[in-house]
Length: 250
Image (cartoon, rainbow, N blue to C red; front, top):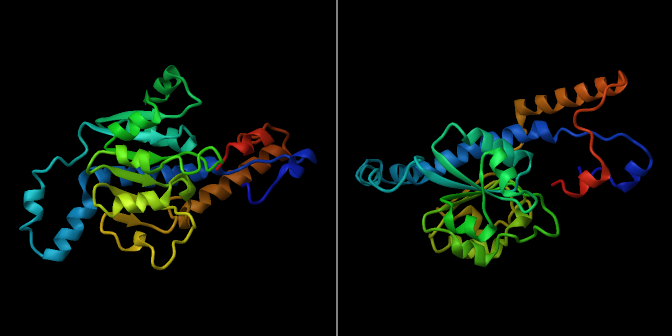
């Protein structure tokens, strides 16, 4: 959105809508899958099983403290995606904690999470999932100090924006093998060919596919058409945005 429009559009009185709500659906679904797989250590089981071609090592791994029962999931950012992820997590036996400085404890509780400051969340969560926008105030919000607070064996999931994380600090932490990461976005958008993101065994890297791809793009088109119909028939738009909204959007 920010790459397509600027303040002049709003000053000209042009009505602006967006399909971010539709794009939030697949991102939240991807995140849910990532959380469940992370808790179950699916990728580690997969790699060990494929390397050994037997179950000599994977069978004993089942006795480790893995699985999704009574895990603590930390959500950073009560964005439309963050809120949808919290909603999707409700049927599971997770403790959900939320860092968002714009929300009070009661507002966090209303969306289904316990309010936490960032350090407490990084220290307490078994799985940390990022859903904050990329703003000057959030650049490198996850830094070496925050990463050092994470539990051994915890997983960091980023489906938001790469710039939110200090990637040099993240790679240094990942290289120790102490935590895992599921990374869908990086900064730059495509890592250099020699980047350790491609090679570290505790990184599951995908090419920015959490958002709408393939069939999921139909949802975006349908939402846009619905908004145009509302506009042409004089109805209020459901997803209109203002210049002030734009400042806080990813």
